[in-house]
Length: 134
Length: 175
Image (cartoon, rainbow over all chains, first blue to last red; front, side):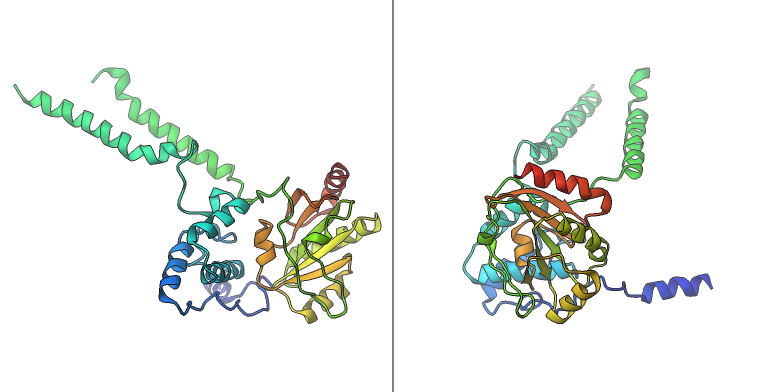
């Protein structure tokens, strides 16, 4: 019984959680120009979905993610650069919306961490090598 | 290895576990706030949402008096919960403009018939473009815009009865 219930729960669609409108024109359609499509795709993989916050808009099925893909493709097709589109979104939602963190006072430890860890590792390794010498 | 140093790894583990336990009990706030508070409303113009119903654009918001721009949708359940509070705000003389996100005219008409119509003007945002332009990430969301067209406050989620005072205070501050 419990199993059946769990199974039914998997099948159940959330009631009224989605719009009745079909996806926007460029939500799930590639741009005719392959170079522009490649640029748009690369950018979409680095933009965070505002609804399912752990996914990129390239991966998400949310309505808003579709509209964000439509917006990215429309702007790229109109000749904007991916950097401009990213900046436009960051102006509205903050750095959070982009998966590519900029180097600023809040994020430099993140960028410095690999280097610092490597130096610590080298220091530990050196201490070990020296002990073996005599 | 000296004695105190030996306990460093276990101490680190305890600190780490304490951090995990803390974050599990007090989850991080996942509300997305618009960065446009304090800035002018970005320029936009909306097509009409219903036939024979006035729509609006960004230039229509600087009317000299603060007003509310409310993102809603007929397919949004919390919007139903918010509707009576919006009607109450309207009764208090607050001007509210609605933006119907990803919606069809017949559904909007049905929604307004069932839940009341607190809006002065309604525009249709079929591809969420205006929603993104304002830094909003869902429905319902409301923006208090002052008389010069500057965004003064963003309310994420439905305006519930307990939020009424907060909204009225923000409207007062925006005067």
